[in-house]
Amino acid sequence: MKNMRQMSHHVFRVLRRPIIAVVFAAVALTMAPPSWAKTLTIGTISTSPVEEVRTFQPFADYLAGELAGDGIDAVKVAIATNINQMSTMLKNGEADLFIDSSVTALLINKLSGSEYMLRRWKKGRAYYRSVIFVRDDSGIFSLAELKGKIIAFEEPFSTSGFMLPAMAAHRKGLELIAVASIHVMPPADRAGYVMAFDNETQSTWVERGRVQAAAMAEDDFNDFAKTALKRLRVLHMTPFVPYHVVTHRPGLGAPLVERIKTVLKSAHETEHGRGVLADFERTTKFDDIPPELLADVLKLEPFLHLISSLK
Image 1: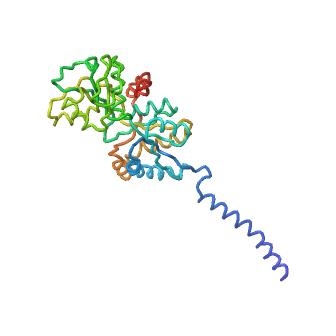
Image 2 (image 1 turned 60 degrees about the horizontal axis):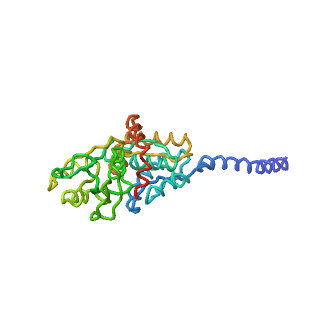
Image 3 (image 1 turned 135 degrees about the horizontal axis):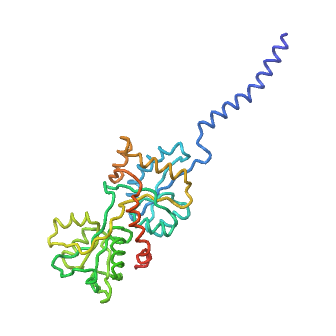
């Protein structure tokens, strides 16, 4: 009988080992991240990468936390210095999402195959437009009268400060050509342009007569016009476009795209989410892009080659 009990105990110990192993394996599977867990990358364009990462990373961390159960183990930020570099990153899968202005995104969509996803209410703005303005005493009353004169744009990848007004000028028949400085006169049949790299410089150059016109977002112009030493006048207004947007790279899985959209569209509904958005350049919320605004942006697509060819 004793031998039988010893044999039974031995058999139980032998059998118990695989049972315990199975139990531990099952627990490990429930605790471990999915084998398909991956890092999601948010792309943006900036000439100040350190500052840009500081701006974007808390938002990226929030998104990572919300997507932890969806196979995303981290969300990082990737900075490109120009449109072509960002387009390549999206096309090659080095960036999954892109957040920037809507016309910049339109060009990047065309170059990379990325797609519009959501609208971002940056600084509380749902949409905006640009204005081309002159000094009120300039005697200039149409875009055609800017031929042989100089326009100060903001910077090459700015929607409101370059792309949108430049395309508007082309649509009205005003051809643009880069000039080396504000002291170089363009050909008589074209308007020359320079980059000022900030709105204050643009406004000052127009006030002092160093350039004959400039272009910037309408709200920014209204702010500068209030304190301008010389009275400024709007010469031309562009159509409204979404202020900022989120796009996704080609090939990003549809279920993940929809999950990200759900997370972002509901972020403003919680106290924690609202705090993260507020710290993210005073973002109010994310929502679907209204069809009429999207249609206005897409109307600009035939003119994108004009912008990308400007030197």
